[in-house]
Length: 410
Image (cartoon, rainbow, N blue to C red; front, side, top):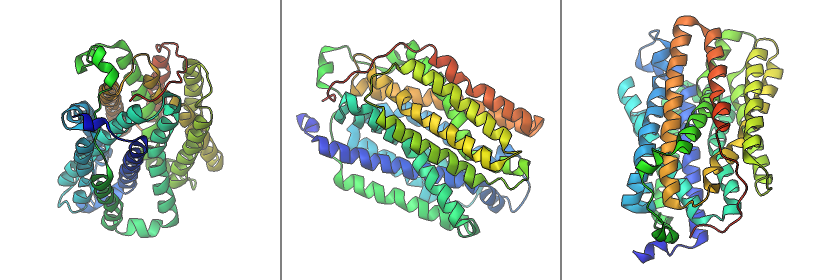
């Protein structure tokens, strides 16, 4: 078993890059599917009018799959170790290819749900690789790249849909087929190049083993997850549910692709900013609170200005994206900077974080769809902004934290 730990840092970074690219592919596939949802629903229901809740069912199932995946990801990792566990995740991700050939909407939904299982497991395993191979004073940079991965995937989709919209929407199956091929390529690369290592830190032999029951009785885990759920509701909805529906309500030339592009490009710039300040010692909690308030205000103003001035709305959405992601890497890196952290503990904690966070997001998304269906667009937007404030409320409960600059766990 000792050979499991004999992996060079350069090999660990290479594995991190493959997993990062895999998550970018997952994000682009998810966002592309959301942008093509009208075409997909039209195809499977032969042009019949369906409830907004039916068109949102893919997003529900993807998030439900992510909840389940995050709960089992750590268990699979500890049983199989990272290389084999990631192969399982990448095989599941390749079900995006199977979904293209589904004969009905519900088989399509199931295949996309399995795809989401893989994507969520990949996110958990990235944190294991970061904990094992990246020095503590560089972890915030790695976390910034992880947080940027979804934005990069969504941004690529926005650019492709803007430049080649007529082509990509003319045949949704061909479009999704192309996106899905990249999942297969990355599975092959991982199988050929990845090395195995133990997710346990040698230093943890002298510590009590961290288990799921420890995570489920940890107050910080619940506070972090609740805040994360509020953040996800604000961010994910702004890319996969709101843009197309907003266009239908403003009727003034507002462009959904521009909205997505503004948020994602702002987010990428925000990620670069977080990398630049990553090694600067500053109090994390006040930083998160200020940026949390700013992002909610920017998104609320952007939604309001979409009715009046689309150009100003895009600018506000870009500001919102920037502020979201100038803090997101700081937020996700927070557990890495807690005392007595190790790869095993991080793997379990992040599995619970993502599972509970996406549970909160799924519940809020479902309630939002009901409000939209029965009470209208305006009230659904009030619900969207108010519930996003959950993030700020739970950041208040975080402990004060100072930057640690120690070596990587190895």
